[in-house]
Amino acid sequence: MEIEIKIGKRTSDLRIEHYRVIQEPSFTDSPDLQEMIQDIHLYSSVTPSKIRAFTMKEIVKMYGAICKQFAGLTVNNEPPKQLNFNGVKYNLIDPEKVGVGWHQDFASVSIEQPTRLAAMFYLPDGVYYGQEDEYGNLVSSIRDRAPIFAEHMELQTFIDACAFFLRKFEKS
Image (tube, rainbow, N blue to C red):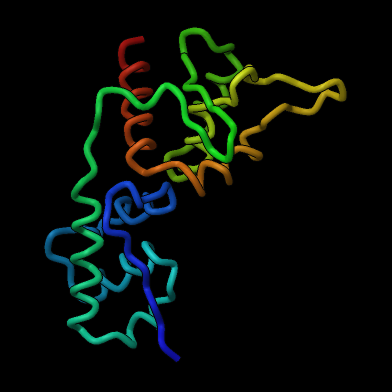
């Protein structure tokens, strides 16, 4: 059985799920073999036992490709004001104009939950935070949006949005 690990070539191929790689203390310039295996596992979700089937040369090459891909990440001044996933437009939240319910929820979301955090940054066009339907159900809840953001939001956009909101709260 041949195992294939796909590693993107561009920074734009990185998604929020890859954030867990850069959260790891093992993601450094000079990792040992175990740390490389761990980081490849976090990047690809391939189990460490399967990664160990590769040669040292292949592991070093994969790790180098992952590092090269992450090296393209930067912190920009502002995230996009609008995103489009699956034909739905999502607008960047303005923390100065959104209700206090958003601020309470935002304070309870951890960076260890990057997809939930990403879902806090954007709302579907025409929906306000906390909006309910005629039955009292939330319209476009965080729980509903998080998987969409996990699949489609680029890691670069997530980093830019995190920096944007950190700066906003630093000023307040």
